[in-house]
Image (tube, rainbow, N blue to C red; front, top):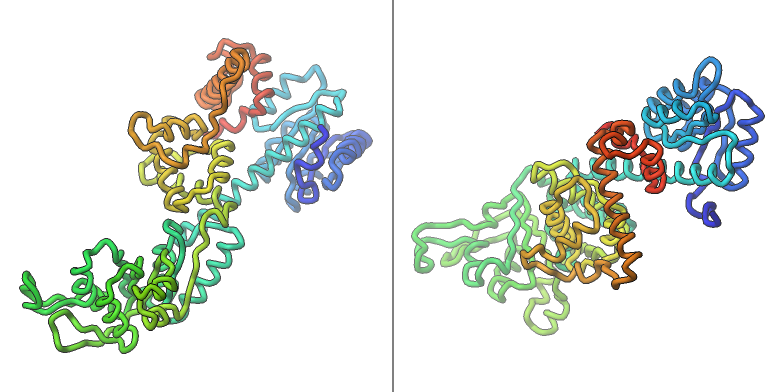
Length: 481
């Protein structure tokens, strides 16, 4: 227990201790405070007083006696969770009322302690209860952030780099100047271009995005600027082109560094004079299009190599935005993973997946050279092959191995496999993994009903409770599923 003090940041946490014997409540507060310095501890003598505090302040942990006058601990439990559903409730009971404690667990208590209290057991329960509340808070914040960002179609991320990017995009969107968006492949350049358009004054007008390398060089010019009838073989009618279609709106030219010198020259004229001349025509017409270009190339090197016009570069680079690669904002990976799982599950009509902590840890530690696009594709694969509601490392290994489908890729090289150890320890790991999966499925099947789970499994209630305790698992989280 040497690391208890450092495992939870105490100044942010508050605990209420409820016992009709005031001296006992205050003594328990002193005992806990000695191990958790900085934890805001409030001893009270009635459920009514505890509820008043809950209505005024955020509370992360409540320890309450079961037998109290006016309002029992069981009654307080129900009312307290109604006020703050994420509260970790721990009930105190004498040896003779264990059944009541088990009933409290069924209702929603996090754990129970028996009197007389063993200090080390108390500290373990307090630490785990506070950690549970912290995780619930983080999950709720994650959902709120994702809901807000998804509702606005915004960039997902709360890192310093992403907050700066959002401010920059918002500022750039308010002007009508040409923008050059730079960044590695997969960082979201098209998403930024669309966001600039959506946040600007042209939002109600057309937005067209063109991937320049995807259109053959001899066709790109006619697609962008249009052509007149007879301009070339097959031109049996006039075609205005994409710039005309985007008039009054915005045009996104992706991978601008790949366009030919001829297209560069005509694009420069559009930027200088706002004029478009169709292929085969001797007349130009005016267009009002905001141009947003993007590239993952070093345009300055291309200028030195004489493959990109310097005057066009300066026309494009009036305003510039550089997108950070994922390795520079790893703190955003949990948000991105949760977002992509939610989107993929919605697209496939599936229940949203629960992500095992070790999976999230591995994803956050991996470099993802393909950036956000690579991460999103990997999450899609996990969603497709997930047979359960929980995504664990076994599924990650399955997807990495390809299950015979032949897509073994770089991300999988960092999946921990580990060398073979002794037979006994290897067997213990397999048994432990089986127990974890079995108990989770069992609790899900019985909706957290411990008595029913014991009957189905053939285990005694005591044995099942011991397994749950070893796993750090609570049956209560399965009751509302």
